Image (tube, rainbow, N blue to C red; front, side, top):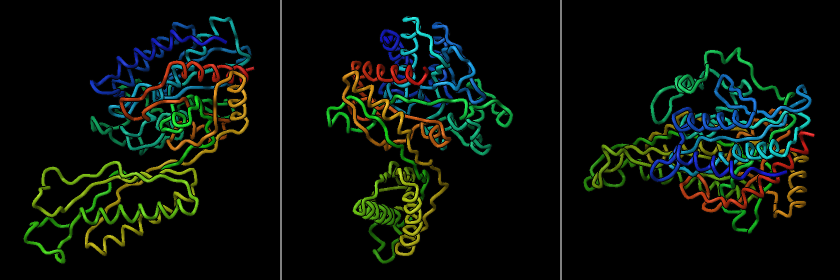
Length: 416
């Protein structure tokens, strides 16, 4: 089957135009950038003759009807929102690949035996609202009422308000029609790799074995006492920065212990700052803010790390006479992906002479929601230079074309 690479080029170009912020790509969830991207995709799908619909949370479904409309549908897709100053391919590559595949099928005159739907899922990036997998949870009726009241980091307005602005109907959350796992034969998500493994091993594609879950404390604050840097001896200090250093070091040491035992996880402190208004080079800091992000495919290990975070908090509070407020905790469950679909992807990649390997995903993806609901799910990573969540994402067009060919043949096999 042919892939409509001309369509893919146009969509990537137009998505870049929509999202370019002068440095990178910013398409904020449920805001102007994501909304414009969804309109572009919907207009493109309609021009192809696809059936187009949205759900109560404005997830976008673009369907090529199959011969048997009652059979469980095959789904593919990803998201088109981005982190602030991100890249143009994270998420978007999966939606573009799905549409380029169906466009090629239509031009070839191929009609699948069952419906094939490309999904553009809302708000995958939790950089904007502190809730994981907003769109995919909403699609299955799993988004709870409190989530609608969280506020966007940019506007300060609630998720519900942004949904309405984006064409959603959050007031129908409890009664709206949602996806049912039994009506979905499988879900396949193509995505750029967000780390260096495929580039480092000169491998074009990665077939994902599992997706990490997460444990997040986004708004940790450590409060000590502001005091004069020269007039306050060490024994009298309640230094928030020193306490933070001890807290971070304790958690880092525990990570090293877990790795030495064979555990697989990551630990990141992506935010760390003193109070910009009160901090001064000649003042002992009385307040520090930081974030904690733990990832693992082992749910028990995430629980163990959570217990250690709380133990470290108490220890540091006592040793440094400070108060540590961890703030609310958020997170997501790990997911195992379907073994049969993994075999299909590897087999088809081999048939097409595309180098591929099996690998885990350290990042979270909407596929985890599908998989944990019992939908057979697989992910296909595409080699991508310079990582992700930055303006320098660099997926080569030829790699995208080969990945889309593997996706197309797998979708054809599953829709037969």
